Structure formats: C-alpha cells, structure tokens
Length: 441
Image (cartoon, rainbow, N blue to C red; front, side, top):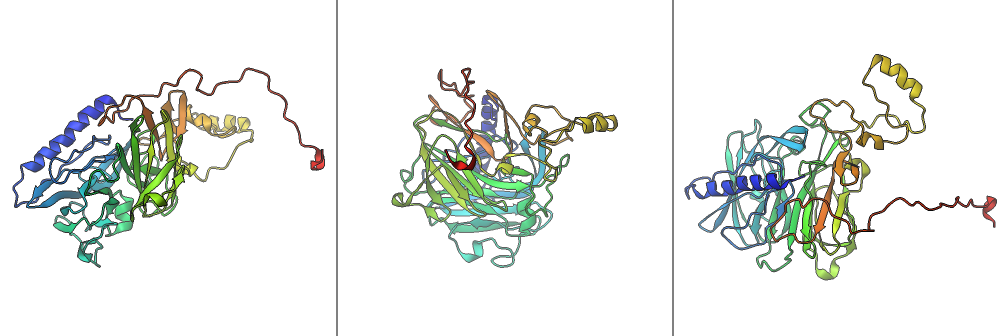
C-alpha cells in the first residue's frame, strides 16, 4: 500500500509534469508528461480553465493540459510500458505516458478539448472516447470513422464535452490485442457548476484482466475467459492502494469494466446509492440503495455514501476467483484426502514439494513455498490480525477521524475501540440439537 514517504515523493513527479507543459509554444503539440510509478497521485487541482472538484485515480494520476485559444489540449503517447502489478511482479504491457492504465483525463462540461495521440507502438492504433457524445469522425474506430494512426505518427481529436459523467478511453484497432495488453484510461467530465453532484472524496478505477504465466512478463493475448490476474487499474492486492476517507465525508467511487465478464463490486460496512452510469447521472428519485453493484462488460458505474462509520472496510469483487492471484484451475480438490504417504514418496524425487489443500487452502497464505521469478502468491497481503488471504480485485476503504481535506495518504490500520473486535468465546458451548427423524417432534 502507499506509504507516506512514497506519496510525497511521487506527488512531486506529477507537479513537474504540469510545469513542462506550460513551456511549450502555442502552435506546437504540447509535451506529454510521463509517469514512472504506480502509486496513487494527489488530485490535480485545475490551474486554469473552468473550476471543478478533481478525482483521485486509484494507483494512477491525472494528465496535465494546457489552454490554447479556448481549447484544453492534452497529449497521450501510446507505447510499451512496464507496470508493477504488486511488489514482486512486473508486467510488460502497452499503455500511455509511461503506465497502464494511461492517465485520467479530466475536463468540464462545455470544454472544447483537443487530444493529440502519438503512436509509439510497432503497429497502428486509434483512441475511442467511450460514452462521449461527439462527431462520428472523432469516435476512434479504425477503418470505420478514421484511418488508423500509423507507428510514429500523431493524430488529433477535437470535440466539445456536451455532458458530465464518468467515461473511459481505449483503442478500437487490433483491440483484442491492444486492450489485452493494457491500453485504457479513465475520462471524467465534471459538471459546469462545481456545486452540482459535489462530494468530498471522488475516486476512480477501471477493471481489467490478464493471463500471465507464472515466471513470465507478457500477457497471453488470446485468452478469452481463463484469466489469472484480476486487476483494478492494472494492480492486484496487496498492490492496490486504499480509499482514504475522513469520517463524515461524502464519498464517491467510480469504476468501469474492460474485462470479459461482469463484476459484482461489494463494499462492507455501508449501504450506498448508485448515482451515475456512463449514460449520465441518476436522478435522486431514481437512485436505489445497494451494498453490491454489478458492473457488466463495457459499463461504468459510480456510487456514493456518507462515511459515518469509522473502520477499515473491505471492498472487492464478489466473484471469489477474482480475489485471487495466479492459480491453477486444473488442480484436483484434495480436501479430506490423506496425502501423507504420497508426500513422502514425492519428496524423495522433488525435495521442495509441499502438499496443499488437504484441510483447505488457507495455509497457502502463511506457508513459504518456492515460486518462479516475477510471480505473486495466489493469496497474499497482511492485515493487523494476520494474513488477509486475498489477492486480485480487493482493497480497503479506510474511514478514519481527523484526515485533512486533500490528504489521501494511507493513515495506517484502524484502532478498534475496546470491546468491538470479534474474539474467542471461552464459555461452555452446548452440543448441537439434532432434528428428529422424519421431521416430527
């Protein structure tokens, strides 16, 4: 998770990027700020243009821009990148401006945006602005609405943001490969009136999935369903930073889905309101209470809640395989199978062999077993009470007292008031009462 030291150091990197843009001549393509770290960056307070309340991109950052005769100009670089999925594992992906996902683009309803896209891949690409109302020729579907962007070339997209909401961008060129390699990013259009839909904390991430063999670095791009790395912004637990919220804040969590299946996102400790889709804002009278909201392929969702209950609350996809890292799906179940004799025979041939699964898989979270290089355990991550036994699409919503406005540093673990933690019962436990045969008393 993001430490205080890393947060301060990487915040400086984004500020530097904004300064570089301001030096570029008005008639040229703006320089493209780059990002080299995978930790969550502070929100980018808009230095010019219409005011808005910025989002925080989970394990990501916002792309700085420049104003040019009323146009808000951005520059994306499509290129190969190395993304740290969690400490101990790097993936060789394709992305934008040094990372996968690319930087979040933030603008305001009514803004005229000009987005330059430079292709540094070895094949052509395009960029589709998912959910944005725009001229057909700016929609980014290679061969249909525009010619593809050849390697080494720069194309420019121009359109006006006609509605506010939560969107994303990704290629529509060789898309099975390019999205499987990590090319995507978030796009947020804020309301023209910054007091509309205002919250104190606003987070965003996009779900993607990869199939990376243990010990390797590059995703298997032809995989359709059997993925082994389920990610939020190309990170897996414990590499996913927490959602840090001050007790009493109104908070919003936005997310999108670019995997090949749906994801029921569940947050503990709260009920919340679904307030936005990629179709727009949900009117107050039509919002519905939830504790889990499903996000289908190609959809965006946002929910809001008043953070009144302090604690460290789990947030995760409720498909249990999606909260695991690389795992062997073809391994037979050995629960209730006596393996002692088999283990003795195998260890004569393979000294490091370890039997697993006879009594469940929880011991995998504490045992130290040899893994190939660049491979994460199936379940990992330590909490204040021991192994969390999760991986993949899992993080923590940290609602703590005394967190200052604009402070998103990890505050550490919640300190539970005395008598509020589940504990061992030391009294007598009665034998279970068996139901009478035939169901009759």
